[in-house]
Image (tube, each protein chain N blue to C red):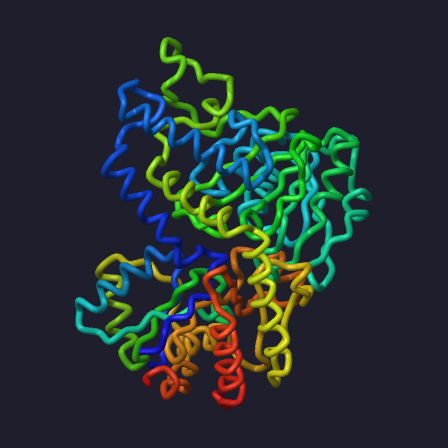
Length: 83
Length: 387
């Protein structure tokens, strides 16, 4: 996964995870990268190529988020966390 | 699946002693009533439990006037009651540069309404020289607020010395004991330092459940409530009672939480604080002695187990704390907290703002073996050439 969505509140992250999973997206919660955002302590990882669909799904479901970022760092460590 | 290693005890302690679970279950099944309200046997049992919990908290703080031990839902609420009670526009307050947002945010809120603020700088290892407080005292200084130990680096602050400075000048001192109550001996004697308030949380080193906390209030301090309401007392009047603890405890008490808190503290007292502290000091020392040799690691704070509680904060060069936290969780089942720990000022003092640090926080239930495993994990991560 090489995309990350940041949020302002953990309430928003929990809602986003539920909405996106329900709509069939593959997502993963991670500790919020502080180098990207000082806001919520949890962020949501996804496949960046699905950015548009994810963004519109969140908007359609009225889930507020801060920003969507390309964040390849998680992909780089996938061998560490998939085992 | 590897054994889970929980190093996030400064956020909330886990596991809790089994007695806590049993006490909560016992309250639900056998006690049941609402305290201070109805006068029937179940209500009286609940009142008795709440008073016994005050006595038990009193043992931790060596403070035995249970009327001045007030329960709140957490340390934040207790700190807010004090800060909002004791400061009005035109007043001056002093605090340190390592305070949690539970202190900084109410102070900044009041600053906008005309309270002036001095923030005394801690040095880079988080320690504070009490003389610096002395320099900031003004004629209109109405409150000093100080954390007992930093929630980022674990460094213990000289609260007793500051209590003395404040006592001589009759200035209230509010001490944030969130990371120290149940972890180290409470050195402030509230009978002598009647100008002090000790705000605590129940769910960290006191082993209670979340939703519990409170404060011990020195006898020279007068507070006012943040919320008013039913107390079960003076029910003939529609005015808030002016006596403690009722004045500051409106609405039905969290008895289920207090049942757990009492059991948590009873466990702590039975084990003995000195035994618990000794074990936590060994955990800190083992971590620092082992981790200091990891290439690229930087450990913040005083790095001396005698002068800190069971919290260590560190970074690894060229690696995002967030990514390290993710690997620790997913690959090694080590749970910790990364980031800014609700304390931007402490991180600015450390020089770790805005990226933050990785924080390990230990409890009595952690083992030396778990700490050794975490050092091996960090060694592997530091050599992983992840970027």
